[in-house]
Picture: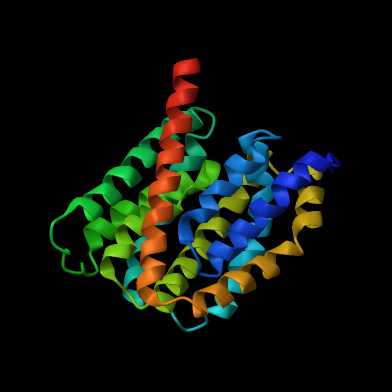
Length: 252
């Protein structure tokens, strides 16, 4: 088990960020968690420690948002995400995390800038098998290695302008399936060492606390502000991924 106090100084807020996001407040803030923990351990180790905690958070979020999700969207994005998870597992030893960071960071930044720079407000988009299938697959793929599935699935779901609890409940169901699907592959790839699992167990009590904090904050915030925050966090995290990916590639 990791005993370095500096690790827990980074890991505790990282886990709470994830919980707050899964509780429905600030969606893409969760993507800051792996980079924050990666200040003191490798990104792969951070991802392995976080996955069991995320699975528990997902179950708490499912209970919190029970019955409040969009089934037509889930029927499209869940099967597509499983294809993405399989692709992520098959390319785990081949693809550099930096390439994935640049790809998803650039997509997220361009998407948000396109929304912000439009002269008129675009009409809400509906459910789309083609767009949902594509972004669901991309989300499953980018979620596998660095838990960065939030930006792609938000690119698909945010323009639909669902009621805020329906949006967050749909995301909760989606990532419950995605994260559980990653577990067998993480076992096969040897990511769940005894050190990693014991460290996950120590951090586990923070899981329900973070989710409940996020849900409370969601209830206290109006829907328009929630969407604004989602776009802001999507832009910030996309920019962070893009910057870190380029920095890693240029240093190589």
